[in-house]
Length: 108
Image 1: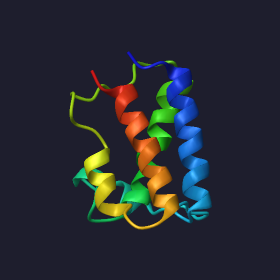
Image 2 (image 1 turned 60 degrees about the vertical axis):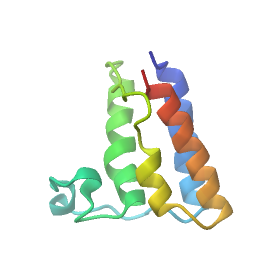
Image 3 (image 1 turned 45 degrees about the horizontal axis):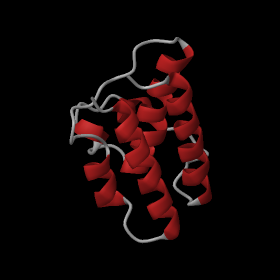
C-alpha cells in the first residue's frame, strides 16, 4: 500500500518539475473543462492540465484527509497516456520518471 508521505513527495517533485519544464499553468481552468466525462478530460484539456487540475489536486485532497489512495492494477497506470504527451525534452523525460514512480507507488 502506498505511503502517503512518499506519494506527497513525488507529487511535490512532479509539480516543481512540470513548472520548470513549462508544463504548469499559472492560470486556472474553466469549470466546463473540469466537468468533462472523457478519460483524462481529453476533450477539454491537455495531459499536463489534467495532471495539474484533476489528478494532483485530487490526490492532494486524499493525502491531506489521510484517505485511502487509489490502487492501480499491475501494468496499468498513468505512464501509457503520459508517454503520448511527454516525448521530446529533458523536462519531459524527468516528468516521465516521476510518473513511473507514482505508478509504482500506486500499483498493487
